[in-house]
Length: 301
Image 1 (cartoon, rainbow, N blue to C red):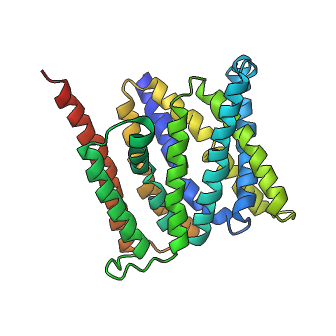
Image 2: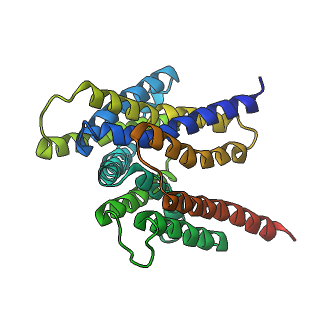
C-alpha cells in the first residue's frame, strides 16, 4: 500500500469521525449540561493526548517547555477547550444539530476575516465571494428559509454558534506562532485548559453523578472530536503527496453529518438546511479555489 493510499484511509477515517460528533454532542446533552460535557470530554481528551505524547517519545520536548511556552499554552487553553467548547455546546443545547453544525463550519470564513487585522493579511476576491455565500447560507439555515421575516429559531443559539467560529479562528491564529510539536502543543493547551474549566465548574457547576449515557457520550466526544481525530488528520497530511488531495476530503463531513443527525438524533432535515449548507460549502470552495487561482496568476511573469 502506498503512502498516498494510507493518507486517504487516515483522512477518510478522520472525516467519518468528525461527521458523527454533531450527533454525539446532541445525544450527550440529553444527559449532561454543556459545562459537564466540557469538563468530562476535555479530561478524556487530555488523557489520550498525554498518552500520545508518551507513545511518540515527545516527553523530552514537553519537559523542556519554557515558562513562556506554558503561558502561551494557558492562553490557548482558555480559547480551546474552555471557551470554544463551552460556547459550542451551549449553541447545540439551544439549536437543532442540523443548524448548529453548518453554522459552526463557517469558521474558515471567520479565520479569513480575522487574519486581516491580526496577521496583516489582505482579503482577496475569493474570500469576499466565500464570505457572501457562506453567511447567506447561515441566514438561510438560521431562519429556516423565512428570509424576509428574519425570524431566527433561537437568536442566542445562532449568536453562540457564530461566536464559536470566532474563538476557533483566534485559536488557530495564535497557533501560527507556535513552533512546538503539534501533539505536545495540543496536550499542553488541553492540560492548561482544564484549570479554568475546573475553576468554572467549582464556581457554577452542580455536583451530581451523571448517568453512564452521559459519561459514554463525553468519552466519545473527548476521543473522536478532540484528540484521536487530530492525530489521524496529522498522519494523513504527513503521508499525502499533496495536502490538497487530503484536505478536500473535509467537504464530505457536513453532508455526512446531516445523515447521522437524521438517523441517530431523529431530526427531520429541512430543505432550508440542505440549501443553506450547500451555500456554505460553495462559499468555502470558492474561497479556496479562487484564492489559489489568484496566487497562480500573481506568480506568472
